[in-house]
Length: 184
Image 1 (cartoon, rainbow, N blue to C red):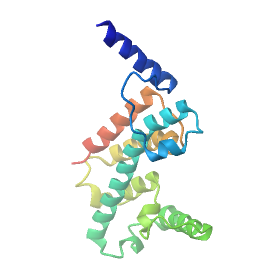
Image 2 (image 1 turned 90 degrees about the vertical axis):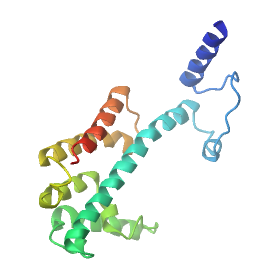
Image 3 (image 1 turned 45 degrees about the vertical axis):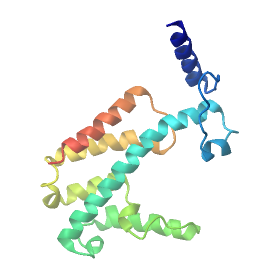
């Protein structure tokens, strides 16, 4: 039993200080980790923990984009983005500006699809603006708005590379579960 307690204690120390004490077989390091050893071990450890939350938002945001595009495409056809379903001032203009900024900067545009330039808040706006198309997907327009607002607040620190504490991580998990719960 004392061997297990020592191993457990060593694992806690490794995690807390971002070091390897050598009591377990050495893990294969990924290329990206070995390329950035100039960063503090604690920062690399924290980034690994935060990457899980980025992954959640990446999946959620892109699944919402697909849902929005699929539903409006079904209603309006291939030119759905140009339809009156997408608000000119609140959605189309900011999206066009983001895309132009990318093109003008000389970087590879992220996508040919304008929906991929929408923000999380804009996606929520498209859903609520077109509630007649989405009311069969979600059980409450108010819930879509409320949960989207909460997710957007939780998204900020993650998208801007700031750590979140356990309470905010729990809120994120609950908000994502709530999002899927309001889907009919």
